[in-house]
Length: 414
Ligand SMILES: NC(=O)c1ccc[n+]([C@@H]2O[C@H](COP(=O)([O-])OP(=O)(O)OC[C@H]3O[C@@H](n4cnc5c(N)ncnc54)[C@H](O)[C@@H]3O)[C@@H](O)[C@H]2O)c1
Image (tube, rainbow, N blue to C red; front, side):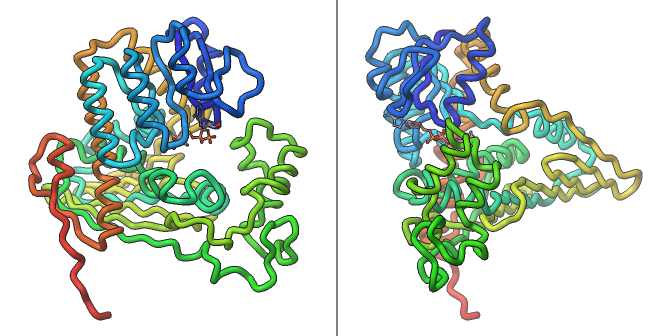
């Protein structure tokens, strides 16, 4: 498949490396990124230059900043190109709908990079759930612990610090998790939802009195958990975000980029924690909790069923039947980011375009949009301080799903 990669940052590079390693399936006919100097394929300064050029591409990978997803996808579909689209599909529900309409008119495939769904771990978990071992699942508690270092990097200092530049923390981070919830809850429809969240800590009023604007100059950095010098220069966990991860490059990042700035400058407004409560038909309740301030970076899910509990911590799956022996399943985690999901989604895209009937394309995008419907609805609830209720609890498509009413939170004196 001849592909154009639009955006060659962290995500674009991950997909590019897969394509290069699978030359029997993929040929990269161009890469668009204004920051790219050398490349394995012809380079274009922007995605529209790449789409205008005569590259012979059959498909594109859209790994651009969130705010460009809609325009780049519409332009690609208009040229008859299949699209592997990073999430979020769009920055609003209206943008998602535009993409849905354009996909339909083009007859092309749009596959969303819900990489967790493709990972070995979550596939194994889904098999356990489908086996019925837990009986009827009555509630699901799902925690997304972003990790304090990653959260400071992405949602305070980085690309998703400001809601107006993309979608805010919940849609950005948890569209994956809403996708998993849609997968786990199957045909059950959302009935009600409420979401609460705030930016509590990374605010100017919490800046230590003597703190400097840049960590490298800061006299109190040794006591600060978000010290950029330690996070980028002395530790390695965040370095994969940069094309050059050498010590010298990290010194430059800390000295001159936004990633070296104090987290308390007030340049950010994305929330640092958010809890979403959902009720599906049949009384199934789901809680999704997203936390920036965690030591570890992990997802943890607890399923309560009428015959067993299932605890999934991202490494193991522990099945605890009320009668019978506890069972621990440790699915193999293949190499590569997201437990092998990044590679698997590229393989799925190849199969989709080369081997799958186009008749499946519409349902595939609709199902991806279910998670966006939930995530945007949760954001609506948080911002309007309201509880969302679906007018059509039995609705079978995302449009009706989204067309619920919003009721104000009941005012209570505490
Ligand atoms: N599926 C996942 O798990 C996952 C994880 C992280 C990020 N994402 C999504 O992937 C997308 C990319 O994220 P990232 O972390 O790679 O960001 P990034 O900032 O590392 O990369 C984006 C790249 O796009 C380039 N770019 C900007 N404007 C451009 C233009 N007009 N034409 C061509 N290139 C342009 C930038 O120079 C940059 O290199 C985002 O939408 C993000 O939300 C998905």
